[in-house]
Image (tube, rainbow, N blue to C red; front, side, top):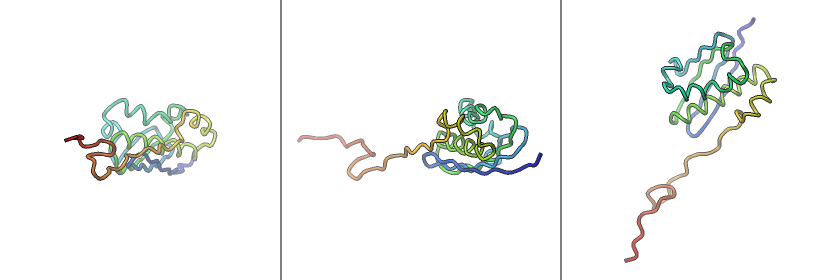
Amino acid sequence: MEKKLYQATGRRKESTASVYLKGGTGKITINDKPMEEYFPRESLRITVKHPLVLTSSENSYDIKAKIVGGGVTGQVDSLKLAIARALIKVNPKFRPILKKEGLLKRDPRMVERKKYGQPKARKRFQFSKR
């Protein structure tokens, strides 16, 4: 079996994940660290593996990811999207499975900008009548 490399990108909030997927044993490396070290919380690791579990290819591919920017949640969601996109490049038959679960949709929600004359985007300073 040839070891072809598949590349995909995922974004969420301020985070961008670039994923390189190749045939292997299911090892996931993020920013040169094992996934267990990069995402210590089990719930985050489950979210990252969700596209792999659906396509039953957890132990079929090695994933090397580079994540830049954002917080933990944004990074997890951008990585999940990138993995799903890479799996479609590997096998286009995975598309209906992943699409049904909504894993191919880029979440467009961003932080609303802060407005002048206010402490935050929507919060107002206390109103004083007199």
